[in-house]
Length: 315
Image 1 (cartoon, rainbow, N blue to C red):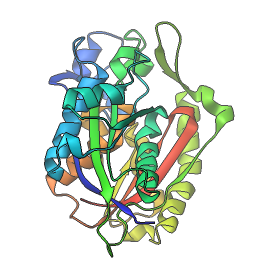
Image 2 (image 1 turned 180 degrees about the vertical axis):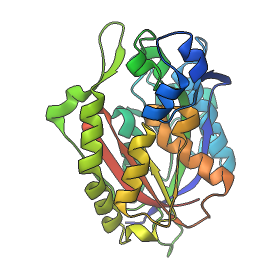
Image 3 (image 1 turned 45 degrees about the vertical axis):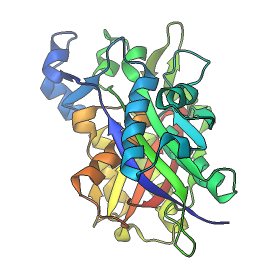
């Protein structure tokens, strides 16, 4: 089986920015309270006329342009989201229609905050098995659609956005650019992060998630590096799910990624769920913070207490 690689990435965020000061006028909170607990200062908010598939299509178009590919060259679209309001057509199909793709396979993947890294692994497997030659992988969420804006424990966390990657087969003789995935879940703790009800609303048990992330995830993330044949100190970049700066920074240290650039996009974007990893990764690439070919750990975790991580080579 041939390996796969990320040819290019792209991201998109809505124009409207909601600051901590804005939130302080909506609920009983303050900039100091929010930054001290989660590190977030701003987040981007989509309007009522900006659905999930529109956010996704913007990010996808940028990734395709960066890869020098046309929509017609994509034969599989995988879209990670947990905030699609409609069941059908799914978001992947709607993105394909928006971009004018002639007939790709289209699938949505709902693993909440770990959705993008699950979708990336699925794309890698599809290419390796010969089921696809070029895959568009998108993480997109409109968390503000499922937010209770009177609940200060959750409304201060979320933002909207999308990130995308074009995955394709490696040229003959080239080392694989997407390493083996390490994934799993803790099903009995699925109650810790929820989007439930009618209308659906986001809720979480913050302390349970924090303790799980702090105690369990460093070992799992190091195992993802081992599967790629790398030591953590060999990493040039680390992109963790952008949930909370108080989780991201200690987790990166405990992994042992002492030489890596650590994505901290949560500060300006908040928690964008499945969009957070591709959004933060695309920004690192755009800024030149990580060079082409360097190894980067992508590690998603959260909803369902699911996790998935792999080492990729920077496009």
